[in-house]
Length: 504
Image 1 (tube, rainbow, N blue to C red):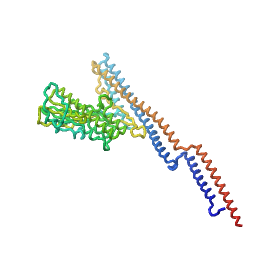
Image 2: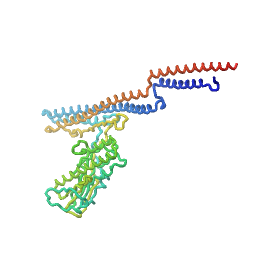
Image 3: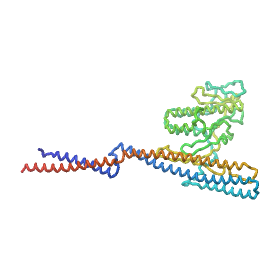
Image 4: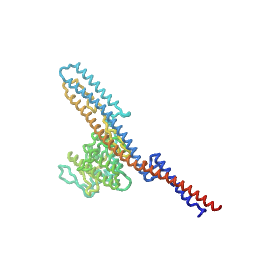
Protein backbone atom coordinates (compact mmCIF):
# COMPACT_ATOMS: atom_id res chain seq x y z
CA UNK A 1 0.00 0.00 0.00
CA UNK A 2 1.63 3.26 -1.24
CA UNK A 3 0.82 6.80 -0.18
CA UNK A 4 3.73 8.65 -1.79
CA UNK A 5 2.03 8.82 -5.22
CA UNK A 6 -1.76 8.55 -5.43
CA UNK A 7 -1.76 6.88 -8.86
CA UNK A 8 -5.45 5.84 -8.84
CA UNK A 9 -6.51 9.44 -8.28
CA UNK A 10 -4.25 10.72 -11.06
CA UNK A 11 -5.60 8.11 -13.48
CA UNK A 12 -9.18 8.84 -12.55
CA UNK A 13 -8.68 12.61 -12.89
CA UNK A 14 -7.09 12.15 -16.31
CA UNK A 15 -10.04 10.12 -17.54
CA UNK A 16 -12.40 12.59 -15.92
CA UNK A 17 -10.79 15.53 -17.77
CA UNK A 18 -10.76 13.61 -21.06
CA UNK A 19 -14.45 12.82 -20.75
CA UNK A 20 -15.18 16.39 -19.65
CA UNK A 21 -13.47 17.75 -22.80
CA UNK A 22 -15.35 15.25 -24.99
CA UNK A 23 -18.60 16.23 -23.29
CA UNK A 24 -17.95 19.90 -23.99
CA UNK A 25 -17.36 19.10 -27.68
CA UNK A 26 -20.57 17.07 -27.73
CA UNK A 27 -22.50 20.02 -26.32
CA UNK A 28 -20.79 22.40 -28.79
CA UNK A 29 -21.69 20.25 -31.79
CA UNK A 30 -25.26 19.73 -30.62
CA UNK A 31 -25.83 23.41 -29.85
CA UNK A 32 -24.22 24.74 -33.09
CA UNK A 33 -25.45 21.98 -35.40
CA UNK A 34 -21.96 21.73 -36.92
CA UNK A 35 -19.67 18.75 -36.65
CA UNK A 36 -16.69 20.98 -37.50
CA UNK A 37 -16.51 24.14 -35.39
CA UNK A 38 -12.76 24.69 -35.57
CA UNK A 39 -9.94 23.44 -37.78
CA UNK A 40 -8.83 20.98 -35.11
CA UNK A 41 -12.12 19.11 -35.30
CA UNK A 42 -11.32 17.88 -38.85
CA UNK A 43 -8.61 19.77 -40.75
CA UNK A 44 -9.12 17.98 -44.07
CA UNK A 45 -12.89 18.09 -43.76
CA UNK A 46 -12.78 21.82 -43.05
CA UNK A 47 -10.76 22.52 -46.21
CA UNK A 48 -13.08 20.45 -48.39
CA UNK A 49 -16.25 21.85 -46.87
CA UNK A 50 -15.09 25.48 -47.16
CA UNK A 51 -14.41 24.90 -50.86
CA UNK A 52 -17.89 23.42 -51.21
CA UNK A 53 -19.40 26.36 -49.33
CA UNK A 54 -17.77 28.77 -51.77
CA UNK A 55 -19.17 26.74 -54.66
CA UNK A 56 -22.65 26.72 -53.10
CA UNK A 57 -22.65 30.48 -52.55
CA UNK A 58 -21.47 30.97 -56.13
CA UNK A 59 -24.29 28.77 -57.44
CA UNK A 60 -26.81 30.63 -55.29
CA UNK A 61 -25.70 33.99 -56.65
CA UNK A 62 -25.49 32.54 -60.15
CA UNK A 63 -29.12 31.49 -59.74
CA UNK A 64 -30.00 35.12 -58.98
CA UNK A 65 -27.91 36.33 -61.92
CA UNK A 66 -29.70 33.96 -64.28
CA UNK A 67 -33.09 35.15 -63.05
CA UNK A 68 -31.98 38.75 -63.65
CA UNK A 69 -30.87 37.79 -67.17
CA UNK A 70 -34.23 36.18 -67.89
CA UNK A 71 -36.05 39.27 -66.61
CA UNK A 72 -33.82 41.44 -68.77
CA UNK A 73 -34.72 39.37 -71.82
CA UNK A 74 -38.40 39.58 -70.90
CA UNK A 75 -38.08 43.37 -70.74
CA UNK A 76 -36.58 43.51 -74.22
CA UNK A 77 -39.05 40.98 -75.58
CA UNK A 78 -42.00 42.92 -74.20
CA UNK A 79 -40.78 46.11 -75.88
CA UNK A 80 -40.18 44.34 -79.19
CA UNK A 81 -43.64 42.78 -78.95
CA UNK A 82 -45.09 46.27 -78.81
CA UNK A 83 -42.91 47.36 -81.73
CA UNK A 84 -44.27 44.41 -83.71
CA UNK A 85 -47.82 45.55 -82.97
CA UNK A 86 -46.93 49.03 -84.23
CA UNK A 87 -45.39 47.60 -87.40
CA UNK A 88 -48.50 45.50 -87.96
CA UNK A 89 -50.57 48.68 -87.73
CA UNK A 90 -48.24 50.46 -90.18
CA UNK A 91 -48.55 47.49 -92.52
CA UNK A 92 -52.31 47.72 -92.39
CA UNK A 93 -52.18 51.47 -93.07
CA UNK A 94 -49.82 51.03 -96.01
CA UNK A 95 -52.11 48.44 -97.57
CA UNK A 96 -55.05 50.75 -96.96
CA UNK A 97 -53.22 53.64 -98.63
CA UNK A 98 -52.80 51.65 -101.84
CA UNK A 99 -56.55 51.40 -102.24
CA UNK A 100 -57.55 53.70 -105.07
CA UNK A 101 -60.54 55.18 -103.26
CA UNK A 102 -58.44 57.52 -101.08
CA UNK A 103 -57.63 61.06 -102.15
CA UNK A 104 -54.49 63.04 -101.39
CA UNK A 105 -55.92 64.45 -98.18
CA UNK A 106 -56.75 60.97 -96.96
CA UNK A 107 -53.23 59.79 -97.75
CA UNK A 108 -51.80 62.71 -95.81
CA UNK A 109 -53.79 61.69 -92.74
CA UNK A 110 -52.63 58.11 -93.09
CA UNK A 111 -49.03 59.31 -93.40
CA UNK A 112 -49.45 61.44 -90.27
CA UNK A 113 -50.46 58.38 -88.27
CA UNK A 114 -47.55 56.39 -89.68
CA UNK A 115 -45.17 59.20 -88.70
CA UNK A 116 -46.49 59.17 -85.14
CA UNK A 117 -46.14 55.40 -84.99
CA UNK A 118 -42.54 55.63 -86.19
CA UNK A 119 -41.86 58.21 -83.48
CA UNK A 120 -43.28 55.80 -80.91
CA UNK A 121 -40.90 53.08 -82.11
CA UNK A 122 -38.02 55.52 -81.53
CA UNK A 123 -39.34 56.32 -78.06
CA UNK A 124 -39.68 52.65 -77.13
CA UNK A 125 -36.15 51.77 -78.26
CA UNK A 126 -34.67 54.79 -76.49
CA UNK A 127 -36.53 54.36 -73.20
CA UNK A 128 -36.66 50.59 -72.67
CA UNK A 129 -34.24 49.99 -69.80
CA UNK A 130 -33.29 47.34 -67.28
CA UNK A 131 -31.30 48.73 -64.35
CA UNK A 132 -30.44 51.83 -66.43
CA UNK A 133 -29.20 49.67 -69.33
CA UNK A 134 -30.90 50.44 -72.64
CA UNK A 135 -31.61 46.90 -73.76
CA UNK A 136 -32.56 47.79 -77.34
CA UNK A 137 -29.55 50.03 -77.92
CA UNK A 138 -26.78 47.51 -77.37
CA UNK A 139 -25.11 47.27 -80.77
CA UNK A 140 -24.38 50.63 -82.32
CA UNK A 141 -23.22 49.75 -85.82
CA UNK A 142 -22.25 53.31 -86.77
CA UNK A 143 -18.84 52.95 -88.47
CA UNK A 144 -15.85 54.62 -86.82
CA UNK A 145 -12.52 55.59 -88.33
CA UNK A 146 -9.37 53.72 -87.32
CA UNK A 147 -5.68 53.41 -88.22
CA UNK A 148 -3.84 50.12 -87.68
CA UNK A 149 -0.36 48.79 -88.26
CA UNK A 150 0.66 45.20 -88.93
CA UNK A 151 1.80 43.55 -85.65
CA UNK A 152 5.52 43.37 -85.05
CA UNK A 153 5.73 39.57 -85.29
CA UNK A 154 4.71 39.85 -88.96
CA UNK A 155 6.16 43.25 -89.81
CA UNK A 156 9.65 42.26 -88.60
CA UNK A 157 9.60 39.33 -91.03
CA UNK A 158 8.13 41.24 -93.97
CA UNK A 159 10.24 43.58 -96.06
CA UNK A 160 11.33 44.74 -99.49
CA UNK A 161 15.00 43.98 -98.84
CA UNK A 162 14.96 40.25 -99.37
CA UNK A 163 16.12 39.08 -102.77
CA UNK A 164 14.58 36.11 -104.49
CA UNK A 165 18.03 35.02 -105.58
CA UNK A 166 18.98 34.49 -101.95
CA UNK A 167 16.38 31.81 -101.51
CA UNK A 168 17.29 28.34 -102.72
CA UNK A 169 14.42 26.47 -104.27
CA UNK A 170 10.90 27.74 -104.80
CA UNK A 171 7.73 27.12 -106.80
CA UNK A 172 7.26 29.87 -109.33
CA UNK A 173 3.85 31.22 -110.29
CA UNK A 174 3.72 32.57 -113.86
CA UNK A 175 0.95 34.88 -115.01
CA UNK A 176 -1.23 33.44 -117.80
CA UNK A 177 -0.19 34.21 -121.33
CA UNK A 178 3.50 34.25 -120.46
CA UNK A 179 5.60 31.36 -121.72
CA UNK A 180 9.00 32.81 -120.93
CA UNK A 181 10.74 32.06 -117.68
CA UNK A 182 12.62 35.17 -116.51
CA UNK A 183 15.78 35.14 -114.48
CA UNK A 184 14.99 35.52 -110.82
CA UNK A 185 18.39 36.42 -109.42
CA UNK A 186 18.44 39.91 -107.87
CA UNK A 187 14.94 40.78 -109.00
CA UNK A 188 13.32 43.36 -106.77
CA UNK A 189 10.96 41.59 -104.42
CA UNK A 190 8.85 42.02 -101.33
CA UNK A 191 8.46 39.21 -98.85
CA UNK A 192 5.56 38.30 -96.58
CA UNK A 193 6.83 35.87 -93.97
CA UNK A 194 4.49 34.46 -91.29
CA UNK A 195 7.24 32.54 -89.51
CA UNK A 196 7.45 35.28 -86.89
CA UNK A 197 4.44 33.70 -85.20
CA UNK A 198 6.03 30.25 -85.04
CA UNK A 199 9.33 31.58 -83.72
CA UNK A 200 7.52 33.56 -81.01
CA UNK A 201 5.64 30.47 -79.81
CA UNK A 202 8.50 28.00 -79.86
CA UNK A 203 7.39 25.90 -76.89
CA UNK A 204 9.42 27.81 -74.31
CA UNK A 205 8.61 30.80 -72.15
CA UNK A 206 5.39 31.79 -70.44
CA UNK A 207 3.21 32.84 -73.38
CA UNK A 208 -0.43 31.72 -73.16
CA UNK A 209 -3.37 31.16 -75.49
CA UNK A 210 -4.54 34.67 -74.55
CA UNK A 211 -1.32 36.02 -76.04
CA UNK A 212 -1.81 33.99 -79.21
CA UNK A 213 -5.39 35.27 -79.52
CA UNK A 214 -4.16 38.86 -79.20
CA UNK A 215 -1.40 38.35 -81.76
CA UNK A 216 -3.86 37.06 -84.34
CA UNK A 217 -6.49 39.65 -83.37
CA UNK A 218 -3.93 42.42 -84.01
CA UNK A 219 -3.93 41.39 -87.69
CA UNK A 220 -7.55 42.52 -88.06
CA UNK A 221 -7.95 45.80 -89.89
CA UNK A 222 -4.39 45.71 -91.24
CA UNK A 223 -2.89 45.12 -94.67
CA UNK A 224 0.45 44.65 -96.37
CA UNK A 225 0.74 46.51 -99.67
CA UNK A 226 3.58 46.28 -102.18
CA UNK A 227 4.01 48.68 -105.03
CA UNK A 228 4.34 47.49 -108.58
CA UNK A 229 7.97 47.89 -109.64
CA UNK A 230 7.05 48.97 -113.18
CA UNK A 231 3.94 51.04 -112.51
CA UNK A 232 2.99 53.70 -109.99
CA UNK A 233 -0.76 53.30 -109.82
CA UNK A 234 -1.13 49.81 -108.44
CA UNK A 235 -0.42 47.88 -105.28
CA UNK A 236 -0.26 44.17 -104.77
CA UNK A 237 -1.01 43.17 -101.23
CA UNK A 238 -3.33 41.47 -98.86
CA UNK A 239 -5.69 42.79 -96.17
CA UNK A 240 -6.91 41.04 -93.04
CA UNK A 241 -10.39 41.97 -91.95
CA UNK A 242 -13.42 40.54 -90.19
CA UNK A 243 -15.02 40.66 -86.75
CA UNK A 244 -13.83 39.33 -83.40
CA UNK A 245 -14.07 40.03 -79.68
CA UNK A 246 -11.39 42.43 -78.51
CA UNK A 247 -8.99 40.79 -76.00
CA UNK A 248 -9.74 41.64 -72.40
CA UNK A 249 -13.23 42.99 -73.06
CA UNK A 250 -16.63 42.01 -74.35
CA UNK A 251 -16.39 44.48 -77.22
CA UNK A 252 -16.77 43.10 -80.73
CA UNK A 253 -15.03 45.03 -83.49
CA UNK A 254 -15.87 44.50 -87.14
CA UNK A 255 -13.39 45.88 -89.68
CA UNK A 256 -14.95 46.84 -93.01
CA UNK A 257 -13.03 45.58 -96.00
CA UNK A 258 -14.53 48.04 -98.48
CA UNK A 259 -13.25 51.02 -96.46
CA UNK A 260 -9.66 49.85 -95.98
CA UNK A 261 -6.86 51.79 -97.64
CA UNK A 262 -3.07 51.95 -97.45
CA UNK A 263 -1.44 54.82 -95.58
CA UNK A 264 -0.78 56.59 -98.89
CA UNK A 265 -4.53 56.64 -99.56
CA UNK A 266 -4.64 53.95 -102.22
CA UNK A 267 -7.58 51.61 -101.60
CA UNK A 268 -7.00 48.02 -100.64
CA UNK A 269 -7.58 45.72 -103.58
CA UNK A 270 -9.88 42.74 -103.57
CA UNK A 271 -7.02 40.65 -102.20
CA UNK A 272 -8.41 40.35 -98.67
CA UNK A 273 -8.83 37.56 -96.14
CA UNK A 274 -11.79 37.45 -93.76
CA UNK A 275 -10.17 36.33 -90.51
CA UNK A 276 -13.55 36.38 -88.79
CA UNK A 277 -14.70 33.44 -90.91
CA UNK A 278 -11.42 31.83 -91.89
CA UNK A 279 -11.47 28.20 -90.80
CA UNK A 280 -8.42 26.50 -89.36
CA UNK A 281 -8.24 24.27 -92.46
CA UNK A 282 -10.31 23.47 -95.55
CA UNK A 283 -11.90 20.42 -93.95
CA UNK A 284 -13.00 22.11 -90.74
CA UNK A 285 -15.84 24.44 -89.76
CA UNK A 286 -13.86 25.79 -86.79
CA UNK A 287 -12.60 29.33 -87.29
CA UNK A 288 -9.13 30.49 -86.30
CA UNK A 289 -10.53 32.56 -83.42
CA UNK A 290 -12.74 29.67 -82.35
CA UNK A 291 -9.71 27.38 -82.36
CA UNK A 292 -7.70 29.76 -80.17
CA UNK A 293 -10.67 30.21 -77.83
CA UNK A 294 -10.70 26.43 -77.40
CA UNK A 295 -7.00 26.55 -76.53
CA UNK A 296 -7.80 29.20 -73.90
CA UNK A 297 -10.57 27.08 -72.38
CA UNK A 298 -8.34 24.01 -72.16
CA UNK A 299 -5.31 25.91 -70.78
CA UNK A 300 -3.07 24.72 -73.60
CA UNK A 301 0.54 24.07 -72.62
CA UNK A 302 3.53 25.71 -74.44
CA UNK A 303 4.06 22.67 -76.67
CA UNK A 304 0.42 22.72 -77.81
CA UNK A 305 0.60 26.49 -78.40
CA UNK A 306 3.72 26.01 -80.49
CA UNK A 307 1.92 23.51 -82.74
CA UNK A 308 -1.13 25.80 -82.90
CA UNK A 309 0.95 28.85 -83.86
CA UNK A 310 2.64 26.88 -86.65
CA UNK A 311 -0.74 25.68 -87.88
CA UNK A 312 -2.20 29.19 -87.90
CA UNK A 313 0.89 30.72 -89.54
CA UNK A 314 0.77 28.18 -92.36
CA UNK A 315 -2.97 28.75 -92.79
CA UNK A 316 -2.48 32.52 -93.09
CA UNK A 317 0.41 32.02 -95.48
CA UNK A 318 -1.49 29.60 -97.76
CA UNK A 319 -4.57 31.85 -97.94
CA UNK A 320 -2.37 34.87 -98.69
CA UNK A 321 -0.57 32.97 -101.44
CA UNK A 322 -3.85 31.82 -103.00
CA UNK A 323 -5.43 35.26 -102.76
CA UNK A 324 -2.51 37.14 -104.31
CA UNK A 325 -2.11 34.54 -107.02
CA UNK A 326 -5.77 34.90 -107.97
CA UNK A 327 -5.48 38.69 -108.18
CA UNK A 328 -2.42 38.57 -110.39
CA UNK A 329 -4.06 35.88 -112.49
CA UNK A 330 -7.16 38.01 -113.04
CA UNK A 331 -5.19 41.15 -113.92
CA UNK A 332 -2.74 39.35 -116.23
CA UNK A 333 0.12 41.52 -115.05
CA UNK A 334 3.83 40.85 -115.14
CA UNK A 335 4.17 40.22 -111.45
CA UNK A 336 4.97 36.82 -110.04
CA UNK A 337 4.18 35.27 -106.71
CA UNK A 338 6.92 33.03 -105.41
CA UNK A 339 6.18 30.27 -102.93
CA UNK A 340 9.14 30.20 -100.56
CA UNK A 341 7.76 27.40 -98.40
CA UNK A 342 9.20 24.51 -100.35
CA UNK A 343 10.77 23.08 -97.18
CA UNK A 344 7.41 23.08 -95.39
CA UNK A 345 8.79 25.08 -92.46
CA UNK A 346 9.06 28.59 -93.93
CA UNK A 347 5.54 30.00 -94.43
CA UNK A 348 6.69 32.85 -96.67
CA UNK A 349 6.02 34.19 -100.17
CA UNK A 350 7.44 36.94 -102.37
CA UNK A 351 6.15 39.28 -105.06
CA UNK A 352 8.41 40.61 -107.78
CA UNK A 353 8.26 42.07 -111.27
CA UNK A 354 10.68 40.24 -113.56
CA UNK A 355 10.98 43.19 -115.98
CA UNK A 356 12.77 45.35 -113.45
CA UNK A 357 16.00 44.44 -111.70
CA UNK A 358 16.82 47.69 -109.97
CA UNK A 359 13.79 49.50 -108.58
CA UNK A 360 12.93 48.77 -104.97
CA UNK A 361 9.46 47.75 -103.97
CA UNK A 362 7.67 50.02 -101.52
CA UNK A 363 5.95 48.15 -98.69
CA UNK A 364 3.03 49.70 -96.81
CA UNK A 365 2.15 48.53 -93.30
CA UNK A 366 -0.24 51.24 -92.09
CA UNK A 367 -3.92 50.90 -92.93
CA UNK A 368 -6.80 53.35 -92.61
CA UNK A 369 -10.41 52.24 -92.59
CA UNK A 370 -13.74 52.05 -90.86
CA UNK A 371 -14.88 49.69 -88.14
CA UNK A 372 -18.10 48.94 -86.30
CA UNK A 373 -17.76 48.72 -82.55
CA UNK A 374 -20.33 46.61 -80.76
CA UNK A 375 -20.05 47.51 -77.10
CA UNK A 376 -23.23 46.08 -75.64
CA UNK A 377 -22.57 42.41 -75.04
CA UNK A 378 -23.90 41.43 -71.62
CA UNK A 379 -22.49 38.43 -69.79
CA UNK A 380 -24.40 36.45 -67.17
CA UNK A 381 -22.06 34.91 -64.58
CA UNK A 382 -23.63 31.56 -63.67
CA UNK A 383 -21.36 30.50 -60.79
CA UNK A 384 -18.00 31.14 -59.12
CA UNK A 385 -16.15 29.34 -61.94
CA UNK A 386 -14.25 31.93 -63.97
CA UNK A 387 -15.56 31.15 -67.47
CA UNK A 388 -18.97 29.82 -66.45
CA UNK A 389 -20.91 32.61 -68.13
CA UNK A 390 -23.41 33.13 -70.91
CA UNK A 391 -23.46 35.94 -73.45
CA UNK A 392 -26.77 37.76 -73.96
CA UNK A 393 -26.72 39.20 -77.45
CA UNK A 394 -29.24 42.04 -77.29
CA UNK A 395 -30.08 43.85 -80.55
CA UNK A 396 -29.65 47.44 -81.61
CA UNK A 397 -32.95 48.71 -83.03
CA UNK A 398 -33.69 51.96 -84.82
CA UNK A 399 -35.61 52.96 -87.92
CA UNK A 400 -32.52 52.51 -90.10
CA UNK A 401 -32.06 48.93 -88.89
CA UNK A 402 -35.74 48.23 -89.55
CA UNK A 403 -35.49 49.89 -92.99
CA UNK A 404 -38.42 52.27 -92.47
CA UNK A 405 -36.71 55.57 -91.70
CA UNK A 406 -38.00 57.14 -94.93
CA UNK A 407 -41.18 55.08 -95.14
CA UNK A 408 -43.77 57.06 -97.11
CA UNK A 409 -47.10 55.99 -98.62
CA UNK A 410 -47.76 59.18 -100.57
CA UNK A 411 -46.67 57.53 -103.83
CA UNK A 412 -49.60 55.32 -104.82
CA UNK A 413 -47.59 53.41 -107.40
CA UNK A 414 -44.77 52.47 -105.02
CA UNK A 415 -45.61 48.93 -103.92
CA UNK A 416 -42.21 48.33 -102.34
CA UNK A 417 -43.15 49.98 -99.05
CA UNK A 418 -45.58 47.14 -98.35
CA UNK A 419 -42.66 44.73 -98.59
CA UNK A 420 -40.50 47.07 -96.50
CA UNK A 421 -42.86 46.72 -93.54
CA UNK A 422 -42.86 42.94 -93.94
CA UNK A 423 -39.06 42.95 -93.78
CA UNK A 424 -39.16 45.16 -90.66
CA UNK A 425 -41.55 42.75 -88.94
CA UNK A 426 -39.33 39.83 -89.93
CA UNK A 427 -36.32 41.69 -88.51
CA UNK A 428 -37.95 42.23 -85.13
CA UNK A 429 -39.15 38.62 -85.12
CA UNK A 430 -35.59 37.50 -85.76
CA UNK A 431 -34.37 39.54 -82.78
CA UNK A 432 -37.10 38.11 -80.57
CA UNK A 433 -36.39 34.54 -81.66
CA UNK A 434 -32.70 35.00 -80.90
CA UNK A 435 -33.43 36.32 -77.41
CA UNK A 436 -36.02 33.58 -76.87
CA UNK A 437 -33.40 30.95 -77.62
CA UNK A 438 -31.05 32.59 -75.12
CA UNK A 439 -33.81 32.64 -72.51
CA UNK A 440 -34.42 28.92 -73.01
CA UNK A 441 -30.72 28.31 -72.55
CA UNK A 442 -30.71 30.34 -69.33
CA UNK A 443 -33.65 28.34 -67.98
CA UNK A 444 -31.82 25.07 -68.68
CA UNK A 445 -28.69 26.49 -67.05
CA UNK A 446 -30.72 27.46 -64.00
CA UNK A 447 -32.19 23.96 -63.73
CA UNK A 448 -28.75 22.41 -64.06
CA UNK A 449 -27.33 24.74 -61.40
CA UNK A 450 -30.17 23.90 -59.04
CA UNK A 451 -29.38 20.19 -59.31
CA UNK A 452 -25.68 20.89 -58.78
CA UNK A 453 -26.46 23.16 -55.82
CA UNK A 454 -28.56 20.42 -54.23
CA UNK A 455 -25.86 17.78 -54.66
CA UNK A 456 -22.99 19.96 -53.44
CA UNK A 457 -25.07 21.12 -50.45
CA UNK A 458 -25.81 17.52 -49.55
CA UNK A 459 -22.13 16.61 -49.75
CA UNK A 460 -21.11 19.63 -47.68
CA UNK A 461 -23.74 18.75 -45.08
CA UNK A 462 -22.39 15.22 -44.67
CA UNK A 463 -18.94 16.66 -43.97
CA UNK A 464 -19.85 19.67 -41.86
CA UNK A 465 -23.22 19.13 -40.15
CA UNK A 466 -23.74 17.29 -36.87
CA UNK A 467 -25.38 13.87 -36.88
CA UNK A 468 -27.71 14.62 -33.95
CA UNK A 469 -28.53 11.01 -33.05
CA UNK A 470 -24.90 9.93 -33.13
CA UNK A 471 -23.71 12.96 -31.19
CA UNK A 472 -26.49 12.53 -28.57
CA UNK A 473 -25.37 8.95 -27.92
CA UNK A 474 -21.80 10.19 -27.44
CA UNK A 475 -23.09 12.86 -25.06
CA UNK A 476 -24.91 10.24 -22.97
CA UNK A 477 -21.82 8.02 -22.91
CA UNK A 478 -19.52 10.83 -21.79
CA UNK A 479 -22.03 11.96 -19.14
CA UNK A 480 -22.09 8.46 -17.69
CA UNK A 481 -18.30 8.24 -17.72
CA UNK A 482 -18.00 11.59 -15.95
CA UNK A 483 -20.46 10.48 -13.26
CA UNK A 484 -18.57 7.21 -12.92
CA UNK A 485 -15.27 9.05 -12.51
CA UNK A 486 -16.80 11.27 -9.86
CA UNK A 487 -17.98 8.18 -7.91
CA UNK A 488 -14.54 6.57 -8.22
CA UNK A 489 -12.92 9.72 -6.83
CA UNK A 490 -15.24 9.39 -3.83
CA UNK A 491 -14.21 5.78 -3.32
CA UNK A 492 -10.54 6.73 -3.49
CA UNK A 493 -11.15 9.34 -0.81
CA UNK A 494 -12.61 6.67 1.51
CA UNK A 495 -9.57 4.46 0.89
CA UNK A 496 -7.33 7.33 1.91
CA UNK A 497 -9.27 7.80 5.13
CA UNK A 498 -8.77 4.09 5.88
CA UNK A 499 -4.99 4.42 5.48
CA UNK A 500 -4.90 7.32 7.93
CA UNK A 501 -6.63 5.16 10.54
CA UNK A 502 -3.60 2.84 10.49
CA UNK A 503 -1.64 5.61 12.16
CA UNK A 504 -4.10 5.61 15.12
